[in-house]
Length: 337
Image (cartoon, rainbow, N blue to C red):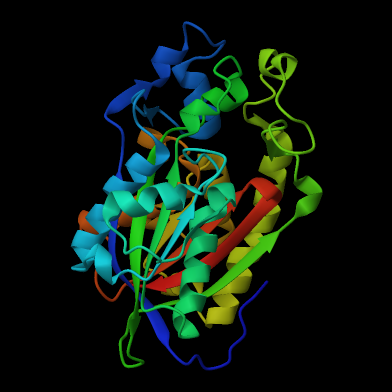
């Protein structure tokens, strides 16, 4: 799905960002005693050196709340001024209700403010950002809290080195607000797509209506995340290359016009391939992969927040976001800070 070029009634922009990471750091070496792996093996294939793991008493909405409060503070906005909340996650506190419902009272959203989840996995924040932008452009909201939060350590099979070495926990958030057309900040264009022919390439097979959880499925770890790595890698190269180029073309931009690329942090080889296809240096990528691993929907807002807070991403910069996740859902978008 691609947004058209018709003039919007309103315009949206980034007002502030925030992020949260659990305190526990698990380096690659800690995985060696129970996985057939090594630091060199993980780094050479993924670029990951460590990941954060949530405490036993932490929930996804707890992490989301801490990131959200920091985003609200950065935006100079009180929670009572938010009129829509969207959380990108597939690891919510409970299967029902949405993680956003648990988040809302923790940060003091007004009762009645709509709050819901988007389950596009690693592309979840980008999907949520586009929905927020559309609400603002059509007059449905003035200020939207967009969150990406995942507690992946609870859904990873820690005996499977193909997935256990990849993922970490964390949350990132952004406040999106309506601005005047004269404001140089903007969001978009954003392009979103899903390739359902690869729906099973990244999946938690049981727990839904197709296959309920049973003692046998738990024993076989079918209630944990499974991934066909070679299929995901191949699809990522094709889909991300195409959507990044199409989005830049729609925006009327060349890759050289982008100040910073803020991608989903999945695999360094995938990111290097995208950079090569665009003809840009990896020095222009905001990367957290080596120290945080793949935090799914949280990875883009965490990287965006880090780039803004450490001064790399400055007011007036043009940033480019892109992601691919389960579904396979993928997309890209332009964000003028």
